[in-house]
Image (cartoon, rainbow, N blue to C red; front, side):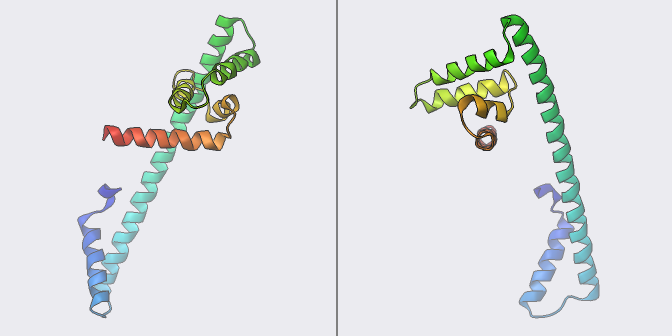
Length: 149
């Protein structure tokens, strides 16, 4: 978002606030420049948000398609129904000691990254609401992005 802050916008904002500090009104030209720069910023921000939404939807659809393929492969390889496979994953999660939070986190990440499970399905397997799993995954991604950067 910082790349959306143009020098012209910053100059217009500075002019507006300095006018407010001096208890004076902006001239017609200064007000027009300010309004134009704010409008350009809002448009750029809206386009950026729309692009981010498109990318997110694209990644979700890809993730969903990978899950469908992985599910078909697991059912063929194991010669089990999907319910039996999910029961097996529940048993594996239940076998993790209650106090081993790191192992639980690794297991949930494995379900998401290796088998492409949705947060709803992961929540169903680990016994947590899907919203909790969504938030946990977002937090994990954010923390790991911070470590990379």
